[in-house]
Length: 258
Image (tube, rainbow, N blue to C red; front, side, top):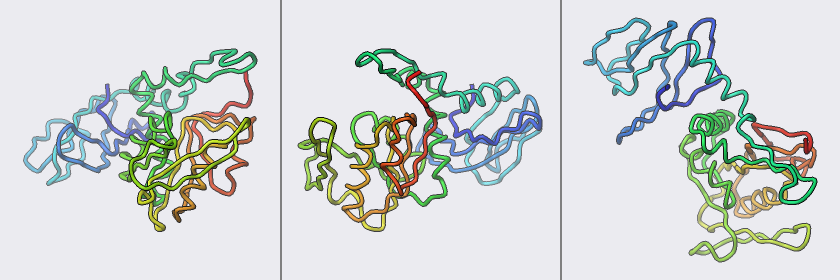
């Protein structure tokens, strides 16, 4: 098992190189580093100047807190690549739920697999690492599952958007139309500032109504919405058209109810 790390797609099996980013040890330290461990069975330490070097394939960097030991081989790399490229395998299809003719996309198997969930969060983060994001926003409840770890990965604020009556301080509200009525979302008025660059996140993009309301709520406060990101997207419902001109990104796409 690899140490907890942010795995990028820059894994080259033939050259036997893997890149580890953003390792967070279980301590008070918060280390941001990139290191290379090479060779088909490399064992290495990212080390301080006093730590021993007992293995080839380790790039020595002085005055860095030791943070990881890595035993890596080709099969492990292939497993990580599979997780990154085939997350759809962790989505369970349940036909005729909640009503006949609907194929429900159940994300709980992905949530139950730490490697798959970690890979999903890291892939979402990789899309926006250089976008200058200052806040990640999400509407309750499933959006929170991805928003909190994504905010940690991007080192930004996490701003919850909630149903009426759930937030204790002064709120900004936005009412929006549903198929059979209206709904309202709220955010603390002091949660965002006009200079903030916001990433919206949710588990699913369907028709885009809820996400559109989240975007407009943040814009009403004066923040800039840089993008909307999703684990799943039902492309046949054309939800991203409703969100234009805001950029949308999704990890897994479904073109129909099959």
